[in-house]
Each structure stands twice: as structure tokens, then as C-alpha cells.
Length: 270
Image 1: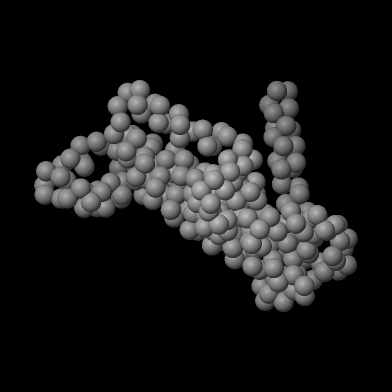
Image 2: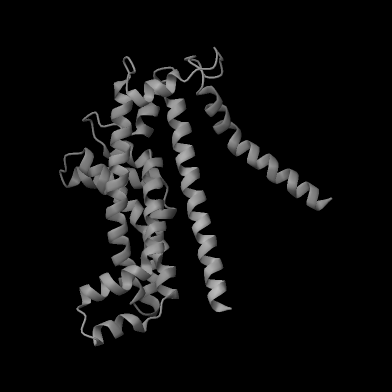
């Protein structure tokens, strides 16, 4: 009976989580502007989205471009800073490492709205002109701790002597970092990059407070503004479906690669 109830609970939870996504995906194949109203099967919304021909809604394409650009730049910067920070934290001793790791975890636990307001006040105090640069800096701020968290386990699994061995064999610190440490840390860096990228795509509160009044819109702020007008642009439905499918494919690829690597390690150990 317990097993049956556990399975029923899991299925109910999965339905609650994924039913809205399936509903939006189904409604993306109709031209109706009202969500939930079916006016016949059609690829018109996908055609409008992919060709950019959306009368009065050209700003949606700009919002998508801004979102992808900000997410990519901030994820790259977060990965670089987070990797270097993780190496530095790993080389700390005892209570100092614990203290820095605790400080690193605060931005992840801190509510987004607090982070957004704090960065907004900081940029105002420093007289920064708010726009694309401040949004990227803000996203790097909350993305870097996730990279540190992803890279640290790889450092702990790595043989600590290989870096010193590279130095003893004549490599410069930068060469040892590039040719020894980075290859060992690459899986953690990739995981951190994906986390920082998806967190940037998903963010609303921090972006809203740091974008200023220059008319800069990301996808999340565009949807917020669009919803306040009394409805949502129909082309958002195929866009959400495409984003979900892309993320699903990436997760499947990553999990398949992990399983292959695990099987390879087991085979080597045997």
C-alpha cells in the first residue's frame, strides 16, 4: 500500500509540474490569441516567431536577443571567475575555507529581490548608468557562486600533487593551470556554466531592478510588461515550447554522457 501511495504521489507531482508546459505546447499549434481557445491546428505562431514577422511585437525578438546575449556573457564571466575563486578557496586552510564557502553560499540563499535592490542601490551610489552593463554585472554576481559550488567537488576529487608536479617539471603557474588543472576541472566548469546560463535566463527580480529606464527588456521583464497590458503575445507559446525542448535535450545529452563516463570508469576499475 505504501508503494502504491508513493507512486501515486510522484505521478500527481509530475502532472502538476508538467501539465502547464504540455498545455502551452499544445496551444502553440493554434493561431488563437486567447490561451486555451482552439481555432484549428496551425504552425502560424512558429512561423511568425522564426521569421520575426509579428506586427506590433518586434520587441519580443529584441527581448530574446538581449536575454541570450546577457546569459551567454554573464555565464562565461561567471565560469572564469568562479573557477579561479574555487581554486583559491580550495587552497585555503581550515576555518578560512569554511568562512569563505559560507560567504559564497549567501547569494544563493538570499532572495532575488534583496539581491536586486542591493545591487540597484550600489549602482546608484556609484553613479553607474544602468543598462546592459549593470544587468550583466548583476547576473555575474549571482551566477559565480553556482560555478564555485560546481567546481569545488572536482578539486576535492583531483590528485592535489599533479599541479606541483607540473611546476617541478618546468611549467609556469599559468601553463600548469591551463594544461593540468583546467582539463581536470572541465566537467565541473561545464556544469557551472549551464547553471549560470539557466539562472540568467530565468532571472526577473535582479534584472528588473538593475536594467534602469533605458528600455532594455529581457524575456522575463517583457512577459511581465506584456501581462500587465491585459494579455500575452501568442508567439510566447511557441517560444516557451522551444526553450523547454532545448533544455530537455541538453539534460538528456548530459545525463547520457555521465552514464557513459560512469560505465567507462567501472570498466577501467575491473
